[in-house]
Image 1 (cartoon, rainbow, N blue to C red):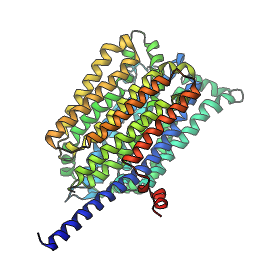
Image 2 (tube, rainbow, N blue to C red; image 1 turned 45 degrees about the vertical axis):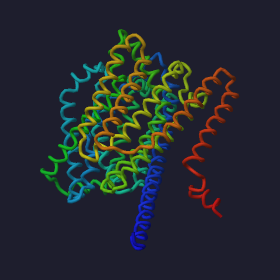
Image 3 (cartoon, rainbow, N blue to C red; image 1 turned 90 degrees about the horizontal axis):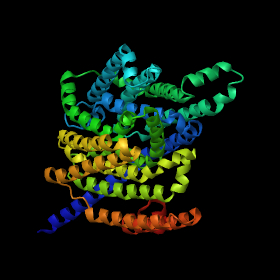
Image 4 (cartoon, helix red, strand yellow; image 1 turned 90 degrees about the vertical axis):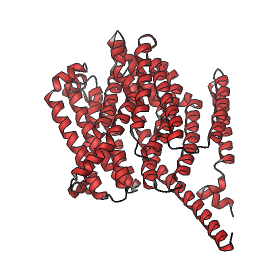
Length: 518
């Protein structure tokens, strides 16, 4: 081998390493910004949990209504976006495609389906409300139909921001919904009752809508509608045109993703939608659903990490899908997701004596035992999301539909069989089993169809360390709270020390690293 060839190869290797490092740095930066919006947003939304659980008692079943209606909203979102978010990213980054036309076509497709959906709902509002057991409150159904259509349309607008790597505007518009929503909820439950004496009509409105529960939905609708005005520049993109041939190709790509998303969301919300129909006493079921829904809010801290990771990861991966190093990027991305997912799990569990106060009414605390199960299910879901790129990048999205369908079937069977006897604990274990099934299927099938060399041994070491720390945590639970928290802090410290020593040396961090290298 000549000296010239050696020099070229050394240069190529260094260039490849530099590109991979830059990619991971870009991913980390975008994830951090999206994460800030998700973390701050979710934190502000968490402020609603103590407010709602303080003013809505478990016995009233009001929080069960909230839980059920937002479960329907999540299902509607998947149906009305019908896979167009991922499809938009895929086609916008394909060679030979007109990016502007892809965006405009996706926007028109989702907008058209949303309008058709609203027409059908309002034409059959009475029967639909009766079927959902909300005959006395058809306005709830109407409200969420509009919210669902607006959310779906805005999803493409937000996707455009992600595709253009504009996380600041993304974060700003997310906050433009969340902050007014929180403030108006505080006004409904804290300020409004104080004004009953001054404005007697307010009390009638308050009682009419399940003692403020229904007003939560109207506040959501108002805030969602107002955010649309922040997309004036992006809305102009709808004038780029509509390509029928492109639309057919996009729909062909999207329908397996729709099926994938549908069965995926059923894994998340089927228990909440079907719960009161699976128990003999529906009123009691509404109460139990409220307890389960409130405690699940604590577990959703892990979902926050998955969401932030997804917002940054999809445009990042699809944008570099033609790069020969994308497999290494996916492998490293999986590793760091698991590392920080486990850290989030341990953090919530070890500081549960603090986190439980997010649910301010102690009557809900009986359901806290579902938190570790639901969090592990969320971790499985996040891993499954990371594994899903093998079939998305080779345009075999129907594999995702098949695997998610099997997982959903497992979850539905567990709920159907065990909820009547074991209540919401069966819901928690159903999600655990469903996502666990999807995760395992995706890994083993993916390794045959499009192998990726995931660092399994490194991941296993973190899992083993976490398991040992968790056993110690369980042993410390009977101790006084203050002592248990000290021990748990030491346990978290052990995990962090291992992380820093093994995979996140301080010298690699932006500010600290610069100081240490001096």
